[in-house]
Structure formats: structure tokens, C-alpha cells
Image (cartoon, rainbow, N blue to C red; front, top):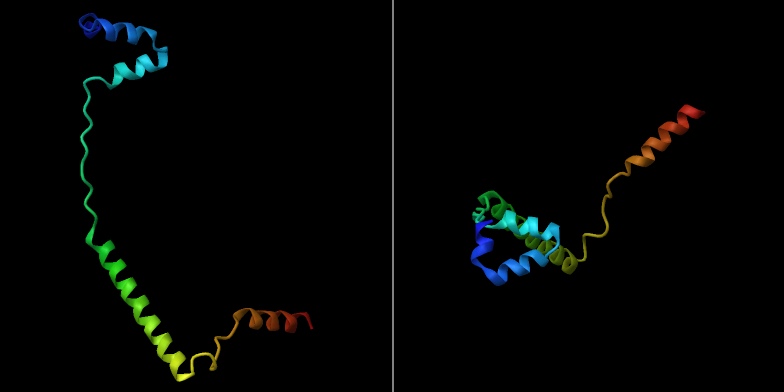
Length: 93
């Protein structure tokens, strides 16, 4: 509380404050927070780089397919759900 006596105007302002703010100010005094710079790990940047590279490559492949007129027709992946439904229907019969 000794700093209250040394600053006249500061003391008045301090006393006018609400109790909650007064407590908060008292706690904050004389404590400096140390900011440490977080270093990003290398793996994160590497994956991002490869991901964008992959995306670019895929885009190029799609463009080539479009120019050739292919890509849309062809074998489609089997829908697993259909197979499950077939199995269920067999069991019911």
C-alpha cells in the first residue's frame, strides 16, 4: 500500500474504483509476463506444402482427363450399402 501514499492523484482514482477493479489492479502490479515465442514444428509446414502440391497435381490430372474426354465414364466404386441391403433381404426371406 505504500505506493498509494506516493501518488496523490493516483490514490484518489484508486479509491473511486470499484472493489473488483481495485483488487485486479493490485494483483497486476509488479508482475511482468514473459512472452515466449512458440516455434512451429517443421512437420506441420512440410505436410501443408505436400498437401498443396498434391492438390495441384490432382487438378492438373483432372484437366488432362477433361481434355481427353474421359474420367466420367468407367467403373464406379460399389456402394457397400446396397450389398448390406441385399444380405438383409435374403435373411428376411
